Length: 130
Image (cartoon, rainbow, N blue to C red; front, side, top):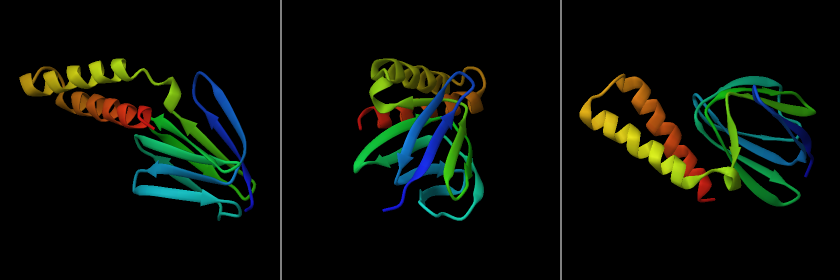
């Protein structure tokens, strides 16, 4: 299977994943996957799970969105945030989920922000269980 370079860039860090054979990302229009030789494209990314396959092993990351630039040799993910599954503090994510649910049930503050917080927390919990 052909490989390509995967680079993940956030405002605070850069993760060079090296040669990978597959990456699946949460696009704003749904999930999309990239394999070697993919047509060049730019995608907007949503909150969700990124799946990376490298050397037959799969890893998962949580993101809060950004952009993906796909070229024939490389995929660059320009993300607001990224966390590897093993880095996620599940208890902290659960607390964030509980706070957002409480704000929504009490109709405290900005409902849109509370829903976005809840969605990010639930995504982090899902990825942390991988």
